[in-house]
Image (cartoon, rainbow, N blue to C red; front, side, top):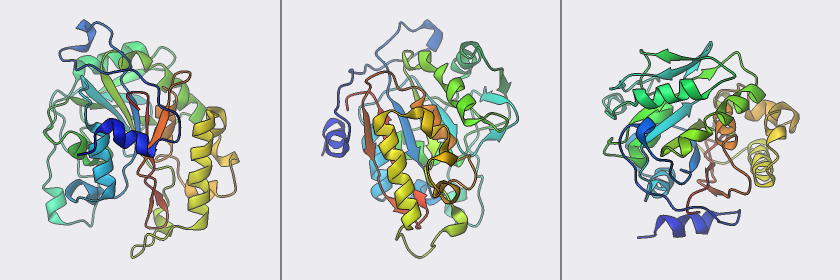
Length: 291
């Protein structure tokens, strides 16, 4: 079986030069600092990925090999709020926030424990914004449909940070930068969305990509490689294709949460570089780690 290290090397477009990881356990505030945990951005796409096996889900699974995080903090496209919130539940519910899918998908449960102590770390870490406790939200499909493949035993604590609809892309980026300390506490931070996400233009019977979807996806990749995060915070100015690729911002913003956590000279490795239904980019990447 291909090792995670070899898998990333086969996909990487940026030279690999990361640090080793060590397994951690316990309550975050009692940890000694550890080597930086990687950061992920995943294109989550169709919820049916949760109950199917395909190239995309194999990519998620392979990427998780060797990772033993203390917890996962997910910023998902599917939790938008007025104000910033972090989930406090010790046993978050599985949210089936979609319709029109088979009964089998609605029966899926992902019973991962929560991480209230780490959620409090988020609240105390963010100084320039107020992050509030949430005791109602659980794990939406932008989170569990991916993690069920990465950590199928549901034994890694999971909590979520919402997308504040009142913030600009730059403000989202700045908020994310304040989460850097969690990486040294063994927390795997995951942005879950899609660089290109236009369901109105979706081809339900074909994966042949639109030219504008391909062009925008490649353009964003190029800027990530160059480290030009300032331009990516002004996506509407990137190209005329932006209005088609990002008709609404919620699937694009998790990308900024991942990029904001990239330290100087940290490598970026891409995987799942495909487009589904013509208008949904599945491009994912990992920052740092044994790339």
